[in-house]
Image (cartoon, rainbow, N blue to C red):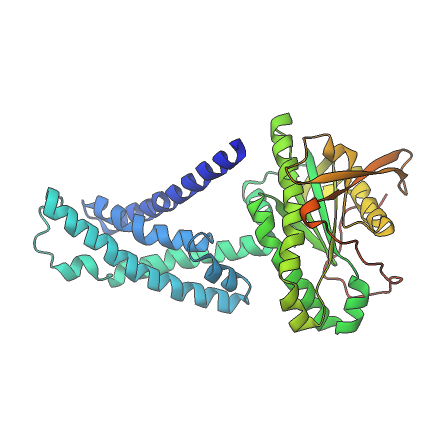
Length: 382
């Protein structure tokens, strides 16, 4: 209940932030214009800038925003600019109408009687140019954010990991069951499209549960939650990670009919979770990347192999379950202690499931053969 209330409050504050950010843009325009009535520019900015930012963040017309984000960069930029232009014209007229109504009641536009109704309702060309300029820069930044991830984008901007930093993190590794045989059947281009659609389907559950997709390694997505701020945060993040896991499984299952139509089969994914300390550092020169280094990553990779051997769709280490009680509707089943390659101590592992819709066992995969990989893991081997 408390988590739901907090989420509703956060959503409300998020919606409030859009017009506030728009007001700042309006203030900047008013200052550049050099007039004394900057408050009018701020009012228009709250409407025009607010709706444009809300759309860019995927909160306004989310289906349209989601579709554009799935397109190539030229289509994304062009389509976004068209939507922003339409929103600008409509929101400008709405804010102008509100100003005119308020003037009838309170006379707030005293001194502006020389302005006809069209002046308040029709978007001025200079306002449109300013809006499009700001939007173009914002759109480019949002696209870069989508390409490299929000966490990496912000971390690079502020230089958070310029020097190596130790952090406690929960890691969720999600890979495609039966990927090898599917890649061979579809070929390089078809397999890449197939994998891209699966990874795209994971995006909404991850954002909804406040995770960060750190990188893609072949058919695997590595998602993490920072738990470095104490036990209460760790408990909340653990619950989010577990919920995110089943949200991903359900999202992929719902997308099954579309995958069957396009690729001839429905995808199946497998997930493992582990928690521990990693060193986070910004690596590279020509290309910068935020890398996670440490035994935690190696153990998580070994757990992925164990999940294949045990043929379970969701496998977690005991360390994850020790952080907090399981979310409502999720059950655990002990699979005992297992010795992982490269470790001197055994790891207790558990299978997680939702009894109302218990995930089916992951299919047995044929012997692995070389397949095209979409990325290279930079985590050092042991």
